[in-house]
Amino acid sequence: MQALYAQLLVGLINGSFYALLSLGLAVIFGMLNIINFAHGALYMMGAFCAYFLLNIAGIGYWWALIIAPIVVGIFGMILERTMLQWLSGLDHVYGLLLTFGIALIIQGVFQNYFGSSGLPYQIPDALRGGMNLGFMFLPIYRGWVVVFSLVICLATWFLIEKTQLGAYLRAATENPTLVRAFGINVPRMITLTYGLGVGLAALAGVLSAPINQVRPLMGADLIIVVFAVVVIGGMGSIMGSIITGFALGVIEGLTKYFYPEASNTVVFVLMVLVLLVKPTGLTGRAA
Amino acid sequence: MSALTDDTLPITPRAMRDEMVAFGLMAVLLAIVPLTGIYPFFVMQALCFALLACAFNLLVGYGGLLSFGHAMFLGTAGYVSAHALKVWALPPELGIIVGTAASCVLAVITGYVSIRRQGIYFSMITLALSQLLYFIYLQAPFTHGEDGIQGVPQGYLFGVFDLSKPTVLYYVVLAGFLGGFLLIYRTINSPFGEVLKSIRENEPRAISLGYKTDHYKLLAFILSGTLAGFAGSLKVFVAQNASLTDVHWSMSGEIVLMTLVGGLGTIFGPVVGAFIIIAMQQYLAGYGQWVTVIQGVIFVACVLTFRRGIIGELARLLRRSL
Image (cartoon, each protein chain N blue to C red):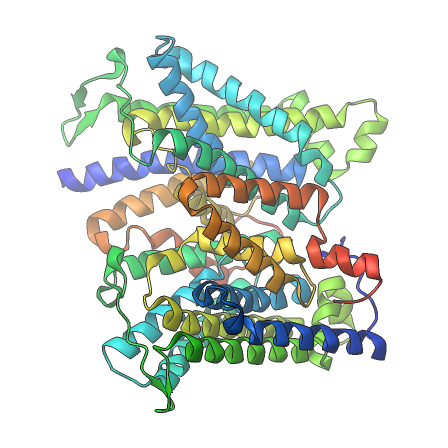
């Protein structure tokens, strides 16, 4: 039973990353109509940012949680201003191709300087050790990642669904021209949205740095799984992305316990099943 | 919806004549390669990728479906052909047929799943499916995991042609490439190809005209996947191995890149693009991961400033369809 609970916890952690990343993808897709292939590379940049902060500037984990998403978010906004904005009105495919190119550049540069092996990142002192819950031993850091990710996901949901700013965002997604006529600076909102989505990816990167090690290709394979998550969940609903992300992480964890050979492929197999039964995705509208 | 290729020229007898002249020129140029002293291995490799890119282009350039997982057909055909040649000791012609047939079966299954969604979702689904295949091949015993299938025997095609001789192999690969190319060319200019283009331009209208667009898209997908597999089977004879590199997502990206550089939806673009990208890899092989960076830069540059690609721009300048 211990092993089952341990795998469930690993599943929940992976689910947190799926949720944070697919949430960012959905927010970006809503505003920019772009599938951000560079999302995995920016997640990796978040982890590296935390690593640099600690090893060069001596700035620890807690500040990295704030600084890394801001730094990577600003980097993302520069990408949006200099490149992505020129794609509006073109076929969606070009957004995918452009961001794929950006991902290749970022990952290639990091690989040149850091090879493909992992760099260690220490768990902060306050989150070391573990708790005995009676039925299982819970490493505190892992519990923290799940709870914190959930809070961030819900905060993002609240921001978009329940605040004035979120209302502008949703309105601009539906009809940007009309929203501009009301005097709202839509291009700036698009830039900020991209920064927000990218910041979420960087935050996931910082959270994963102590667990998964910091590697240039840490986001490359992850992003493909997240694409499958997005296909399963559909990008129409924020809450849908969060729930699908966590649920698939748990299913993956269960698979690791019951049939480990399929743990790499279970998300993709589920994607095929969902496409056969409900092609629009679980929460998606017909596109 | 803005279409991928915005300026398709009507097919006139003059356009057909131009294309046939260009095809003849290409065939002659490629046929005299062994006489020029150019390293034949390089050209053979480029020809395999050119056919692969042409097959990919049939789907994206004419059907408007951007597959981000075409490496799965290359890799599947490669593994099955290599296994058939090495373990089952089949003759080359049967090895090619078995590998291509495996890709065809794979294309039927993956096509049936992936054409259920359009546009960007289609790309993500094909990418995810190819990653699924990647993990299967990583774990399956017959692929030998990280090592791949090495030292595949080349044998005698039809019991006559000794494929271990570079010149003989070259002409066999060239014949395979030209055959595949003509098949794609014929498909594009057939009534089937016209319907496919109409689906690319405006699918709801094609449906309202009574076309079962899903059938057309599935058929295009199968044709494209099968021909990509044929290219993969040919490549086994050139490289004499089959490995995980051929199923990896970065390979799918390279196929997209070749076609994008040459020109999406142009007839000769993928061939030009494949030669450029393979040559680039050859010359920059010593620079490690900078090759990846350069590929990324080319992607970005092409999308931002050069969306028609080399042949697309050339065709526009000459006001011809190429």
